[in-house]
Image (cartoon, rainbow, N blue to C red; front, side, top):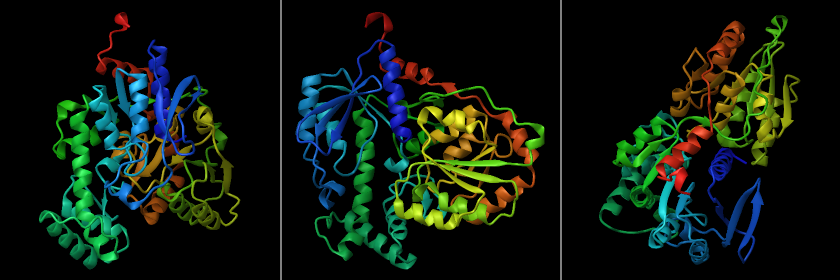
Length: 430
């Protein structure tokens, strides 16, 4: 389970413990009928959905086949509130599902767990190089998307500009599948992306964000601040053993680094391995925890590690054991190359009393005071990570001192109560 799933499970359980009925609804791509099961005491309802994903679905010209089944499920369950936690652009839960709920007069809420609702590349880096303010602009975003597809700048600029003009003239090329029309259709995709964002917020009573920086980006995109609620930064799931592990004074020269996250390209493990293996630091180790979700990338990382005895592959860490495991380390390195909304592992590190070394992206800048409770480096840069890590390993007492400055993480019940307050549910009138 990734961060969003852990968050949603904790929210569902918290609301159930407050005395309300809660179910999680999701598509099932393997069955042709309705199915249900219980996960950790939470009822999960599944409606049938086709596993087929095609260009028409991806471009919004067609909606998933399971829409009717979703509507039937809502008609039978008759929920007072439907809180969407994710929308996709293909055969998952889409904006059409939200419209169906509106038609059925169900009160709606939405939580932004991903930045892709604003930035379709999920990086907030223009051309994967320069920090972006997150404001959707048809031409700018078209060029950025085309650039990230590997096109030379001059082609990306020309195709982006031409696509913007074609879209402004009302010409729709998305139904034509050729290399040229695909390039010229990006402006229309970006406009559809922008329209969906504004419609989503308009259809919901409130939308929730996990931090202030994303709220500011939504407001800059013209969305009403009064409809946006910033939730407290709190720790979902089981915290594990909260008793901090004290390091013996004699062991301060043996620094233990840890990476914890999925083994996939966007998490930046290759950048960390390239930086770490290029540093000559006897006594320093790096333990890697995580599920392999991209086998080819895993093999690339194994090659980078090159059987280095200082690098140990530790497998998957159970979610309820993460904090207890982290307490045995000195520094968490979080090298993600994409802008993450509110990384769960950095909160787990804070709860464990472990400082974090992370790229200077919005979420990390909001959570980490550079040089106080952790350190920041320029995003997506192996050299910058290597230089910062090398400097830290030459100044180990700074790592130990940073542990004293870790900011406390709130219990998740705070977030549960924030939801109930917004839902306008009075505990005395259940």
